[in-house]
Length: 447
Length: 149
Ligand SMILES: [Zn+2]
Ligand SMILES: [Zn+2]
Image 1 (cartoon, rainbow over the protein chains, first blue to last red):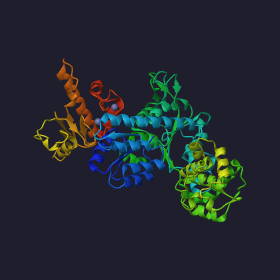
Image 2: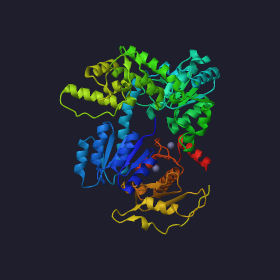
Image 3: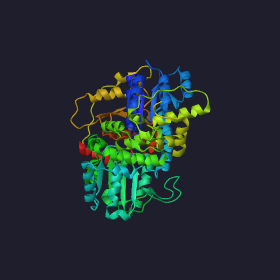
Image 4: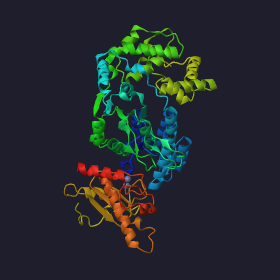
């Protein structure tokens, strides 16, 4: 799980610095903005867990910033910082969705307790999401399709390293299919009869990570009603895949290093050493060597993991595979949605070949999925692809329940880049219901 | 490791905030860090004055994260001292807070382990609960930092 990110918005330098320093020593990743405008700029690129916003600022006020933040991200936790005499605006802020407010100067305990409370409730939500999602990984074999020389190289490499029982580190941008490469190594290795245990280190709240990996003993904590095996134990005889390894905390790095060195570990709350025999494959989209220089990743752990390593090529470096991949996705989604879309027209394909695909295969997959949904004939045209659509325009909200629902669904789809699975999850309905609603309302990304 | 006591500052009146009648700890740290110190050294200031940083009502101490200087105030550490073994307990509290702040100068962050020196204390009782040592994780992280030099 990435470090908790906190944004401080205050136009007084000394307040930003003193609060920032305190929070940094408390282990948070702190960002600072000197104005509401600057804050909005930062929010565009970074998702913050908590925002600490001074109510009284020159330029955009804290209240206006709160409104902006809440309209784009209703779940954002915003805490207002206020001085004596502006209690009424704090009360207004609470009505507008602020989590709480602090009167400055505040007691360090008050701040600590407040942040902990916010993070705890967020962790609960994440925990539920994680537990609900862990068996629904959206990885499919198409990503490993490729006739390009780059992919042929990868296939040969995987064949060569599969029988060797060494640790493997797979690097590469997000969406390049690192997880599938790991699975391929496992399937071709002597451990193929054993389990393949995957864990996404970037998606698990820190406090869950320990028990997920090591398991726990009954009574180790309040919720530990019985013994539970962790992934390390469950991977016995097989392969343990640690995805997004760059995201694990310093403490977990120390624990993991010990496991790699001794091949022995303890369940949380357990005193009995447990042995487990597994091969580790780790993956990351981070530049670990830079992280080491910054002191965010342990060099000794890196050397333990980086026995054999290779990089999954980004899609833009194997563009000759795009037509093949796109057709596979088209085939799958048109079947799933029961739609007669069976062609991608020439112009669309040309556009697809020109585009750089920063989100790689996953972005291509999402783009094709959305195109199948919005396509109005049997063939996909450039306008069906989100990457080439004109800017989406905001529509005013109006009264009827149906209109509200339509608007809500459209907004959710837009904010999830028309990824149907994610949008359906966000809306709390299943994919087929979402498809039928999209049809019913005639929704498309073009406004 | 060598330790020595110096009289670098006559007083910290320059850090006094007249409105709050407290001393701004960051101002003291800035002054200390501008001193000409031997390489790889750390400087700890100890004061009886009550410290604050502008956004907070008070602090027990402050340190530059990964820097050279830190400061500890005994002012609030004197709260709730028992009648017997007063000095010993106060001494222990001060040493714990000094080691805690020194930890920060070696890049250590707060630790969730309540018995660890790097735990952030919400109350004086928390300070007393800490043992005079670091947990396994913080010890390893400190060792790493010492190796880095
Ligand atoms: Zn501290
Ligand atoms: Zn510790």
